[in-house]
Every structure is written in C-alpha cells, then in structure tokens.
Image 1: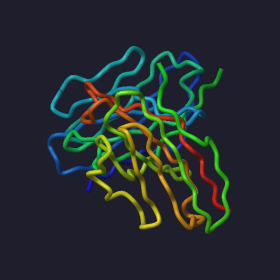
Image 2 (image 1 turned 90 degrees about the vertical axis):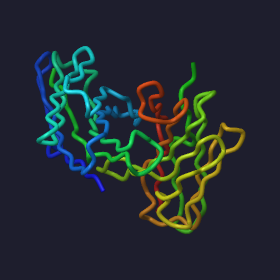
Image 3 (image 1 turned 135 degrees about the vertical axis):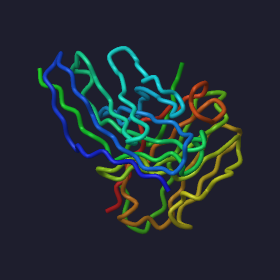
Image 4 (image 1 turned 60 degrees about the horizontal axis):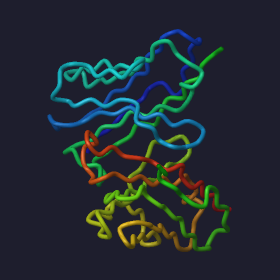
Length: 117
Length: 117
C-alpha cells in the first residue's frame, strides 16, 4: 500500500510572498499520478495541480508549481505571490494505476495554510 | 452549470439512528465516488459507482454502511445504527468517465458533516 506524508500541519505566509508545502510519498509502483488539492472552508475539494510520474518536467498552473523529485519521492507545492484566497487546507494525493475508483487514491493529512495580510 | 450537490449540509443524529446522505452528481457524469474525511485527516475512499454499478465496495468500513445509485444519477449513502466514530464529513465526487483525471477530473461536492451524539 502507498502512504502520503505531509509533515507540516500548519504554515503561514505573508501576502504576496512565496510559500512551499512539502509532501513525501511511498509506493513501489513506477507509474502513478500526483495531485495537490485545496479545501477552503466550504469543504469542497478543488484540484490545484496534477503531475504524471513519467514526466520529468515539473507541472505549473499560474502561480502554482511543483518540485517533483521522483527518486526522493517528494512532491512539494510552491505558491508564488500568495493571495488571501489561497488560505485553505492543502492535500497531497497519489493515484496508482490511474484509476480513481478504488483505494489506490491516497491522501495525506493536509497542511493548513494561513495568509497574513 | 451546476456542480455536485450534497444534502444535507449538516446532520446531527443520535447514536443508533440511521442516516441517509444524498449526492447529486453533475449531469452526464457516469462515475461517482464517496469519501469520508475524519477531523484532521485526509480523504478515505468508501465506494465507487460506474453507472449504477459499484465495482469496488472495498472501502466501506462495515456492513452498517451501504450505498446505491439510480438512474445513473443520484446516489444515497446510508449508515445504519450510527456510532460516534461515524462522525465525519462525507464527500461525494463525480467525473465524466472515471480515470486519471486528465480528461475527466474529479468534481467534489461540499460534503455532509455528520455528527453522531
């Protein structure tokens, strides 16, 4: 079974600054997908960014980018120019075999991000 | 268009009572998922529907939990004889066809917060 570890229960960053959220995972599979989800107080899980393990290039989505280190099994999320709307819980997740519909989508315990005005 | 809708938003029930949680997926989405999120935890897979069939029920924690889906639309998660450890947020998600999310990302509802007293 795979595991996902988010070692930072809480993080805070000054508005407009950059923050990095860490995530490590453990799997014996070579083919998998990695995700960062954002969960604001509304409780809705919102996909932030997605990375295929077979791609060496780090994914980027506007102000969000990842540092994917496959050998180290590390998948950190960098948020640039932090905005008040970025405040939320952030979950890292790994998907094995490319299929959401079973326990092979595994989530970390989350990092609560606070933005300081 | 409308997103995934879940009702009720919040439910407080007494230990031993049965509860029904409802999920209305996005119209046309054939895949539907239920997850449980305990306080301070990530998401835990419960069950997955493809159409009206549930090929994977492995995540249901006990035989007190059941789910059904009709008309390839609405799904109901039923918890019988609720226990305090059932207290959690229950999240529903749908996707067009299931899979890795590149062409068919998961869309989450806002969840039902269940409190068993």
